[in-house]
Structures are given as structure tokens and as C-alpha cells.
Amino acid sequence: MVLVIGTRILVKSKEELEKTAGGLFIPDGAQEKPAEGEIISIGEKVGGLKVGDHVFYGKYSGTEIKPEKEELLVMDQLDILAIVRKDD
Image (cartoon, one colour):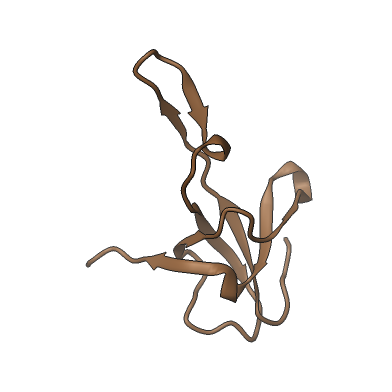
């Protein structure tokens, strides 16, 4: 388990493959759009975000870490561009 401190958050990136008309798959990294993922841990000074939130963040935000062979991003809460909340 990775615990972040201060105003940092830990995000599990959502990687999707987009299929072209010719049948080729384009990875997320090759597409020009904000990155997205799910928050899995937050620091004690983070406000307005919670674990489980689906968020969009800048393409080059955060630092990649690989605890237990899982790719995660550590970033500051200011790197978050938007939160996606589903209507109940």
C-alpha cells in the first residue's frame, strides 16, 4: 500500500485503446487528450477530492511509480483538471 502525504494524490491511470477504421489500435499515449484515472489514495491536506473519484489531469502531470508492478501516478491536487461524478 502506498500512502501519499500533504496535497498529493495517487492515481491509477485509465489506459484505453482506440481502434481505427483500418483495424489498428492506438494507445492512449498517442492520442491528444487529457489523461484520466481513478484516485486510489489522498494526502491529509487534500480538499474536494476523495478516493474513488474519476478524474482528468494534464497529459504530463505527475510522477510515475511502480509499486508491486502496478503503474501509478503521484501528483499534486492542483494537477487535477476535472472530476467526473455520476448522477444518482
